[in-house]
Each structure stands twice: as C-alpha cells, then as structure tokens.
Amino acid sequence: MRRQLVVLARWPVPGRCKRRLAAGIGSNRAALVQQRLNRHTLASARALGAMSEKAIQPQVVLAADPLGPQGARRWARQLEAHRGVRQGPGGLGVRMQRQLQRALRAGAEQVVLIGSDLPELQPLDLLAAFRALEDSPLVLGPADDGGYWLIGLSRQAPERLAGHLFSGMPWGSAQVLELTLAAARQQGVEPALLGQRADLDRPADLRHWR
Image 1 (tube, rainbow, N blue to C red):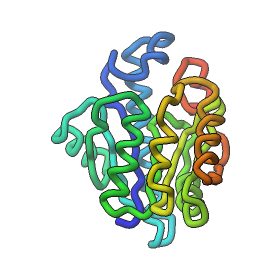
Image 2: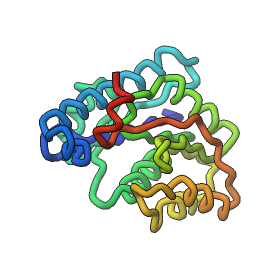
Image 3: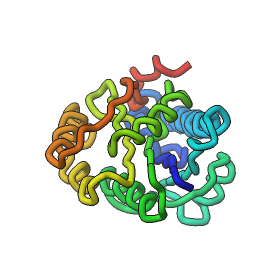
Image 4: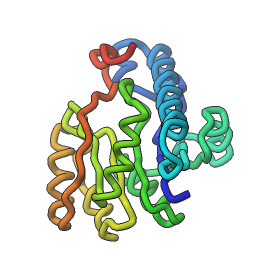
C-alpha cells in the first residue's frame, strides 16, 4: 500500500493501561475507557477508507502493546485493521520511530501515526493529514497539552529526520511540540500543522468523551 495509517494501541487490561486515568477513576473503569477509545480510533480509520477517494485509502496497521506477534494479529482482525504488529520494546519515542521507519522501509510513500486516546478524532482529521503530506514531508497535529496527537512522514523527508524528532524528547511535557518543530526546522523541514485536539489521559479529560 502506498499509504499506511499506524495506530499505537494498548491492550485494555486493568492495571496495564491508562494508569494516570486509573489513579482517578479506578483501573477497571480506565480499561473500559481504553477499550472504547481503541474501537473509536479504528472505526475512524475504517471510515476514512469508506469516505475518501481511492487514492487516499491507507492500509490500517494496529501496533499493539504488550501483545506478542500472534496476539497482535488476532486483535487487528477483531478491530478490522488490515495488519497487526508489535510496538516492540523501548520508550515512546523509540516505539514511534520504529513504526514510522518500518512503514517507509516496507515501501509506503506516506505514513501517519496516531495514538488511541483521541475521543474527538474524526475521519476528516486523518484525510487532512495524508493530504498535507502531498505538499510537506512532515505533518503534526498539535495537542492542547503542548504535545502532538498525530505525526506523519512522507518518503521525501530527509533520512535522518526521524532520529532528530524523537531523540532526547521530554515526553509528557508541555514542550514536546515546540521542541519537535525546532528539531524539524534544524533539518530544513517546515512541518504542516493540523487543528489542535485533546487527548484523554486524566480524569479531567473525560469531558471530551461523549
């Protein structure tokens, strides 16, 4: 497939997902929220394929954690993704970089990566990301906490860009987007920016969930 949409998703088991949310509402309820978010994200991905022109119908890849290869493939079939893979070991930046580079090595011309904690995600958001990659080698979706909810690369991006975007990043801080923009510009890349969205990490974030 010329395009890949990679969804980083965590298996919704109490005590193994949404720990910051679980601290406020309990691990069982947090796991149920994670389950709903996973389904919502994959439904939005499937809807993109149904609504957009044939040229922008990406292969949907579920990058699962902490399942093994067979478990990832089974879960991907349950959520109607085209493919299931493991996220693999390492911190967030390592896992994100791995998935982006895996997709590009597999021949994708564009790859968009999102998490599974976006209650306001719409198929049009994903369509906008792929369209942005037609004109820019990098697209980012700013999050209201100072990070980003989406990142996408095209094959036209400098080969060393991914390493600069993720290396030494203070994940979870309010400086992530600002530092990522600076790292991209140091490599001569001006990112395209999408609309700002909120992710769901803490009890107060549940206001974004209907």
